[in-house]
Each structure stands twice: as C-alpha cells, then as structure tokens.
Amino acid sequence: MVKHFTSKDLTQQALAGQGTVLVDFWAPWCGPCRMIAPIIEQLAGEYSGRAAVGKLNIDEEQDAAVSYRVTSIPTLILFKDGVEQERMIGARGKEALEELLDKYCSVV
Image (cartoon, rainbow, N blue to C red; front, side, top):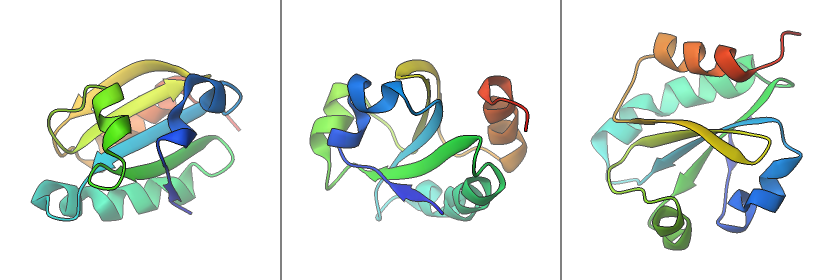
C-alpha cells in the first residue's frame, strides 16, 4: 500500500490531481526513519482511497530532497492538490500523523 515516490512523482503537475499526499523523506541508514516506517505502512492502508501515503528515499532521489529543501530526516510533507500544506521534521507518533492527514482528507 505504501507508494514509493521518485523525483518525477513529486512535481507540482504530477501531484496536482492527486488530492492529499503524505510523503516521508527518509533513508535506510536513518534510525528514526526506520522507527516510523511501520506507522507509515499502517497509515497507507488506513487512508487508502482518501490519501496517498508514501516514501521517498533521499539517497536515491537527491534531486527531490534538494528541491523540497529537506535537510533533516525523517521529514514528512503533506501536499494537497500539488501544493505543500505542512511539513513535520523528526519522528512522530501515529496520532500526530493521523491528525495531520485528517485535517486535509475528505471524509469517506
């Protein structure tokens, strides 16, 4: 269920028709990133049909990390119709991420 984003996926044009999208900028060597990975997977399933939840590996997609000025990981950026709405830096609990997603998701 978790999408694996590339730099190409995160252009404003590509995101424009996607509604709510939560992107976890991460790297395999990042301990806090690995710590929140199960939460990201759970949210991808729970918000299926209401939001796209995925990850972007900054080691493989450095252009996207530079483009979005990601200097610390994990960084979670929430987009709504292609426009960045909010970002969270650092590991967060499931409740904080649910609150963020609920703020921008349509109720099913």
